[in-house]
Amino acid sequence: MTDRVRVGVVGTGFAASSHLDALARVRGVAVSALLGSSSERTREAAQRLGVDHAVGSLDDLLASVDVVRDLHDAVERAIAAAAMSVTKVGAREGMPARDAIDAAT
Image (cartoon, rainbow, N blue to C red; front, side):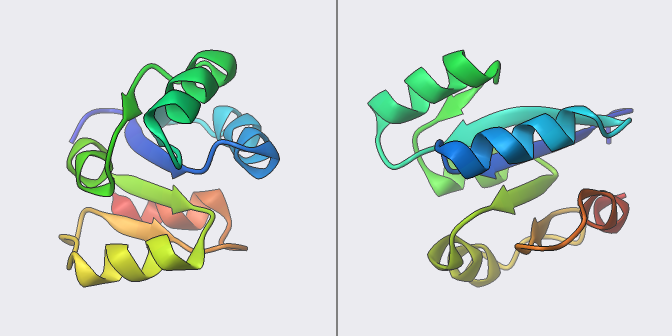
């Protein structure tokens, strides 16, 4: 694992921008991927929110990060169904970012 925990965020709206702002303040975290409802929305949001990697699918997101911060119940179910390895966790709504990061390290 790198010296920074790679976080992927699902969602491109207001809630995502709030979560990205909060994650930017957590030492040892790099938001490295963003997934939205369409390729166009994802690219636009990644550029607007300063995220380097706009991904096109949940599989791409899971392959490129250590922690997924999802903002939607359906995504949480897909993450669980993907049987993520021990180094990858799905951070639940209301779960403090530090708890999710600690679980991934």
